[in-house]
Image 1 (cartoon, rainbow, N blue to C red):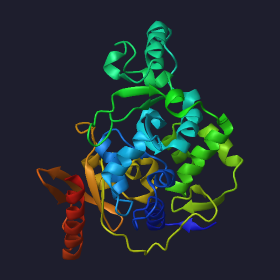
Image 2: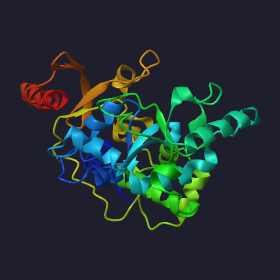
Image 3: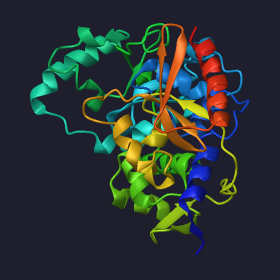
Length: 328
């Protein structure tokens, strides 16, 4: 069985996450390729697409949200994601069984919330105080624009997904297979436990889905079996990787992708720690996080973790100028 080095897995991730070269593809297709995009902070989804799509325009994403071509909703791991319209229901149906159990004491408050939502989109603060923090556990909801956009960043207007998109038309087995397929398309090759962690599904459920799929297998340098889709990209480990700026909460940095070393372990606490739950913007040099960035005033300020070459610094300055222009 072929053994894949950490660098080989790193380049596979960069290729599948469209971080080796920007693409000329519509946002819904890009979101499907990258397994959705975390969107706890609305500008993050704009920047996450900007760093992957050539000539990406902020207004185009807002229009696609308004036209319901892409959807912002609480989905995997009870976290806000941006997904294509086509992926919303499979993602929601696949994990619905494993949402937190309904508290019977909230039944009346939930019924009242449903009645309000049937009349149209509702601000979170207009739902009962007992239910507003947990309503997305029990109902299929979308975040309705212009809330949750670059211009109005708080995603605090909810609508029933049935009203916004029409009723679900996918069975649970097909939904779960698509969810697993999206993970492998976006992050593979991977161990089944990493798929389970990303999706929020029990490992046994993921194992059952994988058993019915046509897959190929590898091993990593620790001897773990990794599964993948046939013909998925596996670039040469020595493929050059350009500098890239990533938004907060970029899913490539989370623990399910640890095997790729895109975030070196010695730097993980500088990006994620208990005193900074909001995460922070990062940048990549040679396919790994090499520092952080912020937008302050009218400029991008970037700070490396270690000394960088003059070539890398110049490349970062050029990319930072493009990101600055995207902000203003």
